[in-house]
Structures are given as structure tokens and as C-alpha cells.
View 1 (cartoon, rainbow, N blue to C red):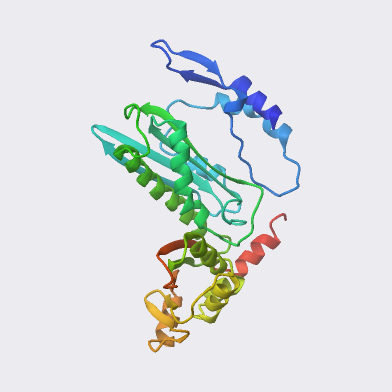
View 2: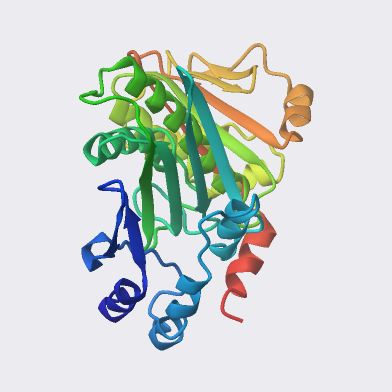
Length: 330
């Protein structure tokens, strides 16, 4: 990778307006970020990429057309079936603060280490230390709250960049109302992109939300949520549109967390299926089967053991998932 970095640094020039005239400064290797996905263990096509860098740099345009985001998002797709883009903005006086992001990811997606890439850009002149802090917080309930298949890869990256074109004032902190407004917009954008990854999960037909309520701790809620969301039995039941709530119980049990069954309430959407350690008196198989036909399913588990909550997002397992991964290298 160092060879590619040196080649990029050699050809790419960054214009900086440090003075009225501005200066041209060569990009430094330390300022470059590499992002790559592909088949694990196969040799990286270093020469092929290295030999085309100069042409790519020459084709860069200062004023891109309106399709540039779509083209860029499409260029990083692998098993994705659609490009993933999101945009947020808010007013700051007579200025418009913009945030735009793209992402890729479809399979081998699990929190913290996935075949997933995302690049986010803003025009707001916010220090990198603050941007880093805001992105880290935004990822907790977005990129780190999704799973397609529970499998992890060697590639996982979310980065945020500022063009610094729009000044928002100096000496602002994370407690500042303007920064908090930016954080809210960033969280919304990250969640949007993260959900798009799940919707486009390999072979996915249904989007699934697993919501844990009133857990004894955040970590406990998260552990239980992913225990259910990553279960092949749960995911195949949803693919088969089978309201088998026993598989939810199984997911709760294998989480290793201590559950009081007498306090437990399980709902599919708004339909109560189990409570107080047994099937609910409100249980209606016909309504449940109708609900399972939906393309968006909510599994809500109220533990009634505390005040913490966590929500994660996943998809079903279909025959298409097997076909995509069986033929991945063919």
C-alpha cells in the first residue's frame, strides 16, 4: 500500500487558501486513508491500481455534476445491489450546514468489524477532534447496531471529512448548541446509511428491528438484541413468515443474560405473543401470520428489569443468501 500512497502523493496536489493568493501543497502520505474490500487472502492488484492513479487524478474536477455522489457510491459496491447515499442539512443564520454520506455493505456485516465502508463529508469548519468524537457517538446506534449475518471481515471503516468552506465560529465545544445540532443531523445520517446496508443485505427480503426495553444495563440490552438478531433460526423463521416466538426465547436464553420470565413481554409489532412466562391470552395466530407478511418486522422484548434500551437492525435469511455466497468467487 505504501507504493500506492507514494504515487498518489506524487500526482495529487491540494489547493489551500492559507493566504489570499493561496498555495499549492503536495498531499502527504500520512494524510491518505486506504479503504478496500474483497476476497480475503487474495493478492491486492497493486500494479493495476498504481498504474492508473495519474489518470484518475487528471480526471478530477473542481466542479462536479449532480451525479457525482451517485457515481461514487456506485463505484464502491461489491455484492451490493444498490448505491447507498444520505444527506442532511440545517440552517445556521444565513448559512446552510450540509452533511452528505455514502456507504457500501451487503454481507459479512456485524458490529465493529464488517465488510462495510462509509465516507461522510460536511462543509462545516469543525475541528477534527470534535468530528472524531461526534462520529464515534453516532456509530454506536447506527453502524455498530446492524448485523446482516453476524460474520466479520478484515474491513470496516467510517470516516468523516470537512471541506471547511463554511465557518461556524471559533472555540465551540461538544456542549455548544450548534455542535449539538450538527451531532443530531450526523446521527440521523449515519442511521439512514446503516439501515440501507441492512435493507440491501445479501438475499434479504425483510428488514427486522430488534428492540430491547427496560434492561438492567445498556451492555445487557445490546448483548440480548444481537443474540436474537444473529440467530439463523430467528432469521429463517422470519424469511418463512413463521411467527415462531419460541425462537425469540431461545435467543434470549443463549445470550447468557439473566432473565426473569415472569416480567418478560414479547411483541411482534403491536401484537403481544408472550408474557409472564407463557403464551399471551391476547395471542392471535391469524393476525400474527398476517403481520409476518410485512416487509418490515419489529421484535420488541420488554425485560422489565431496569431502564436501559437498545435497538439493533438485521434482515432475514433466504435461499438467495446461500446462492450469493456459494457463487461469490465464480
